[in-house]
Amino acid sequence: MKPTVKPKNANYSSGPCAKHPGFSLDELKDAPFGRSHRSKLGKGKLTEAIDKTKQILGLPPDYRVGIVPASDTGAFEMAMWSLLGPRGVDVFVWESFSKGWATDINKQLKLDNVRVFDADYGKLPDMSQADFDNDVVFVWNGTTSGVKLPNGDWIPDDRAGLTMCDATSAVFAMDLPYHKLDVITYSWQKVLGGEAAHGILILSPRAVERIESYDPPWPMPKIFRMKKGDKLNEGIFKGSTINTPSMLANEDYLAALNWAQSVGGLSGLIARSNANLKVWEDFVAAHDWIDFLAESPDILSNTSVCLTLELEEDRVKELVKILADEGVAYDCSSYRDAPPGLRFWCGATVEAADLEIVTQWLDWAYNEVK
Image 1: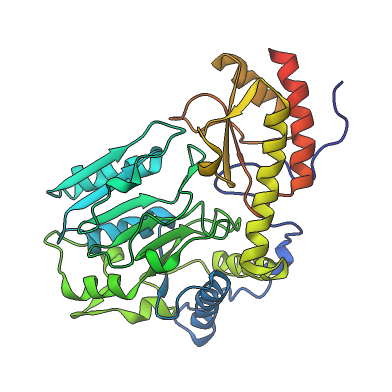
Image 2: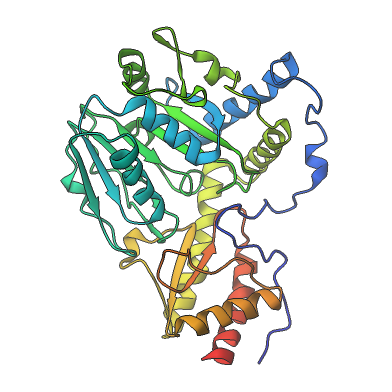
């Protein structure tokens, strides 16, 4: 029978993602509207965002955190254009965004000695092929494939090259081995459901050493420049952003960080994402017409959950439309380049109780369209 109860929040987009439970515009009332981001107040707000990020993630004390332009894309491009070149590059690809990084390295930066290791949607490349005399570029979680790295055991501590990790749909939801990662990037609009437009760039001391010892041979746009003279521009990592940030978006990020602390910090956030994945694991186990796109449980993402159905593509589209028309699940179709199916964002801002309700509607909608 058609369910009668609907979820409190029907937003399941994988970016921008659902706001944290209880979110209110009142949480943004202290944003320094009309004030310079260079003022003591404005810079203080940006520095607070940086300091809380370090605290909640438990980053090594010598890692630097900066707020940079253009979301995760801007942060990762900034890192690639500033750091790559002195060594060969190994790129691991298993979904759309990692494929984009490989394209930029080959066709835009036009680097020599580039090796690309790729895998189909639902699979993970053989990470043991990495040569750590090279720089190694990868995503931690495939946002469009629902496939994550199970751990960082494949990364040695005594590597010569840098490890560059796009972690935008993994950070705050997965236990990342930060000491094995030299560059980490993400955007506020993923796991914490913040507003878009800004990215976070995290650098290890080894990455800083590369920046200070290497000058790329290509022209460097202003928003990518991290050096002042021959040294790292430390101001970027102390709240002095390269260009004008949105103080409203920063206030929204602070609200999300405060909420994260209220649910137990990093461990609480990871537990919430795992509880959301458990709802789907139970549902898939009980229904033979639905399965995960990920080929094995150890690489199954707990944020961007991608599902395949025993339906033709047009029937999948019809099902997605029904869920949206009923107001129970918005933006839950698979990514445009991925195999036809469903993709539900299950990061920490999503409630497991809402997902339980959604699965009931999905069961009904499937029987309506099959």
